[in-house]
Image 1 (cartoon, one colour):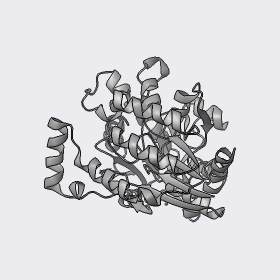
Image 2 (cartoon, rainbow, N blue to C red):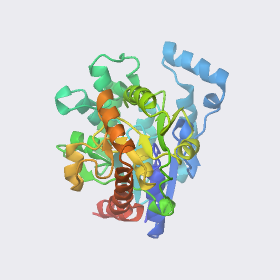
Image 3 (cartoon, helix red, strand yellow):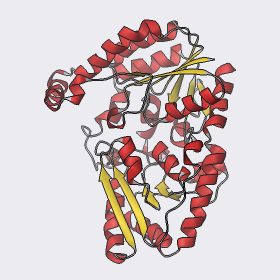
Image 4 (tube, one colour):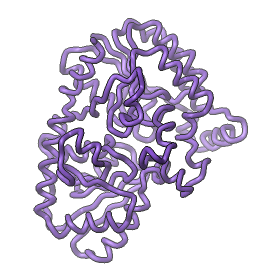
Length: 379
């Protein structure tokens, strides 16, 4: 098959591409690299405005006062230019309703042409979109990335990236995808919960991880326990990083000689990965039911990850509590207790490390996941 993957947020599409190529398919990936992370792409949309400090500041001014984003205009211009070459694909898959960070109205025009000049189109929900944000806005549905907003711990302005998806223009884009694609696939339990009753929902396919990249990974010696906490300033509130930071202050006071704490902020993807290689424990996020991509890659390396691992997720994979990772809750004392248990019981670290690697190999192997996508696309 000839497959076009549109957008990249977390290395999901890169890993899927690698799996599909292993199975003999031809795959093309187009994306904007997802900001600082700059994931590789066959067609990478770039921005002169974004790479210039002065132009970026001016662009922020235009966004704020005139609702004009020149970065989006640059991306749209580049996509329009290469669009005639993006035809003849058996499958086009968008990673999100905002797959290439374009203005919604522009997306409608360009994505319509992209879909029309190819055979089948599918939409992934592996992040925020109209359906998930609408679901998260109801507190009865459990906690989510919008819990800090609902609890008035952050402002509407600081939550604007998430809330934009329920605006009229993004709702129109959502309805476009609903009408013009063959269905929606979710990548984890958080989004699966929001889509479960949608007519166009095709099911959950776990994130693909290129497990071949982590075959030789071993857990570092436990003479001192290294704890890594990576922070992205644009998402730290909705990921609950404050609870990890508070917990680490207490851990440092208690275990000054036993623990090394590494806290890093806004690192490019490659630097981020290198920074946690020494770690035994990785602190990921507190407001999720399932693991994000960074957490899964850390688990593939045998790290003990504090992340989403709620009851619904454990039941889906038939796992026990704390078997392959630690369910992180937005509660400082709880986090301190869980970290304490690991520091005082190194054998538990070894046990979870092995289980984590086995779990990723069994449930997230990039080749077996690629086969699941092919099953849906061909059926």
